[in-house]
Length: 482
Image 1 (cartoon, rainbow, N blue to C red):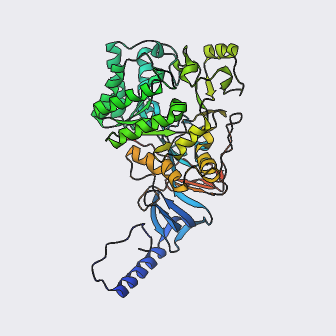
Image 2: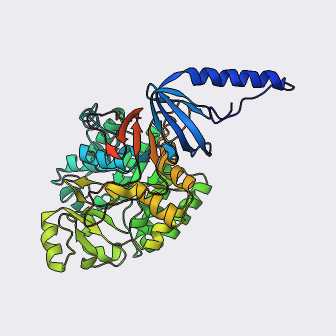
Image 3: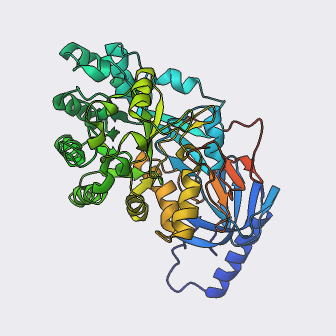
């Protein structure tokens, strides 16, 4: 109906065209006469599900998108979006920064939903309760195998294992307890199972298979950081084959996290393996962040003996201490490894980042975390960087493909129909950006810099970014549960 809902009605054969025109004009007049809570007027509306790309007016009522209309709409608040793209809010499947500080940077980067899916959490209910009514953006998490293993094995690490869970294989009784904790998290509404095999390398392949069996039994996706990276064998190919085989054997849905930092120069081969598995019926997806460096805890098992080969042949000088920005030496590496803390790994070739950004099946996810302004720029700038660097400047992919990778595809991975779409009935999680100006500003030396060119962001119909600034005193984010 003149693009009101993005779909055309089925018309009776031989309907009188004049009567139809009168009906449509009357219907449009009725819609225009309605008053919406907020109207986003005159924007370039882009919806990655229907491929709508046209100037439209968006009416919001009760936290939902109530109209997408070519006709003018009345609203208690009307915001002029002329010259700006209006689209579904971005969904970050891999966001370790689950704090008010991080949520602010997410909102300024166009993210309306930030999820902790790789490491996950445990216990689950308490984690959700701590954020209800306090979050600027939507939040959610998986039931984490890592925190479950750390609890059962009494590991002293915080986010990641650094001793017991990293250094020994769980006994059969400990494995039973770990599985039970993960199951309990699913009972409490977690969005799937999170697993970081690289951080619990002594966990046997049979024990990993048992976690996949639980995912299949409960019909939830499993989000996996694979066992090893890089070209050395056993390396990324062996690790990818392990999780693909476990998914095929159990029927579990699989999401492989940060494919570029695992594959490094072998990223194209990894994408071929995933594409082949998908073509033969496996439910497998993957993601990448638009940067040439990763970040993890220097005290974790990732830096056990032989780490240089597993990370693509980098050396001490390719490591950057997140707290100070300094590049490491053998001496500082040894000192910081005893201390523990985040280190940036400059290991991913730029052309491999471009390969992943150009691949329409690779979702965008940040893997980001900031702590008092220290960390990795991906926590603050991933989504603006895709739009500015890889769409506008490098033309590595189309704008619509980029939006699909950042909103619709993650929503489909989650099985959530109400998000990732700019359509009537969807949640009013909306990002507005200037396609000529949007760009990340965060750097490795100063990661705590907001993206620019994203003047408005709405979460559940509430404006959380207005005129490029965070709105104080609002917390419309809701917990996403299975």
